[in-house]
Length: 128
Image (cartoon, rainbow, N blue to C red):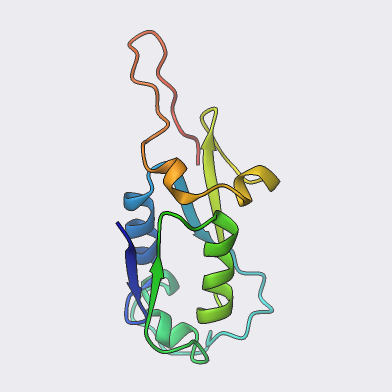
């Protein structure tokens, strides 16, 4: 099922929706400080609760459609080119959130089912 994200949505909600749709993945926005974003707007709340359209005034108006057939790298590039957001997607591997060349070329559908073991003797916990 495709995930439709809107520019009126705040960063925290975008992360939550993505992580709920793809439980074996974690979407993060990691800012370096050199992005062309609007950091000077007056906010009544933290930065992560600001809508994309306020943070990134140069973003392409409209929605982003994320499909399970996309690769992790394609998703990161979509956020970067459309909304000018530094998105990074991490995959749950062996109980840790990881990012490497193999995960970048992986399709999102590979991570729809949670990677947590539910065997009573061996329960993995994600750290992150």
